[in-house]
Length: 159
View 1 (cartoon, rainbow, N blue to C red):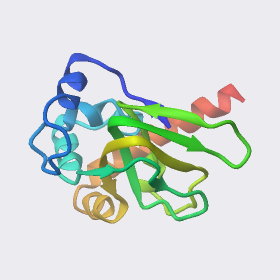
View 2 (cartoon, rainbow, N blue to C red; view 1 turned 30 degrees about the horizontal axis):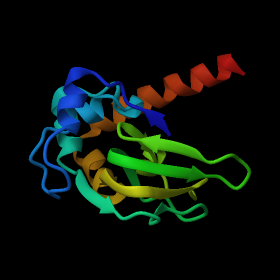
View 3 (cartoon, rainbow, N blue to C red; view 1 turned 90 degrees about the horizontal axis):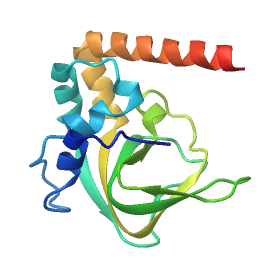
View 4 (cartoon, rainbow, N blue to C red; view 1 turned 90 degrees about the vertical axis):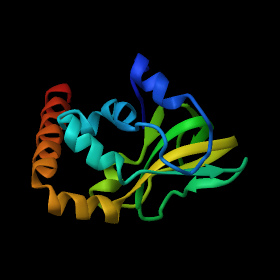
């Protein structure tokens, strides 16, 4: 769970009409701020963005539940959500923050509940559609592997 860089392009993509459910806006700047997608070219980011859908959650609705298989990645476009882990203090996610990016790569159980605090609008990418994209665009899979390898190296040197 992390925060996207709030550059001018990301702010522009996050502004505008809310909850249309249609992809009127360019989601590339939003996805470019996600570390997992850091190695992707603009062309490849456009392919990933084409998979995105918006989804609105009402106050108190569970967006994801701990222990269930992760099937999607989320970026909060509007509103805020509460992350509740079995052993930790609740944390708050706000617009521009994201969670569940590893769910695009495997179906491991979620480690926390994420609950809408008020009305929340998310950008969502499902794992099955993403897996099909990786099969048709192996260069995207290669870029993700480079990013993950760098993360593992960083974690090993930090430990």
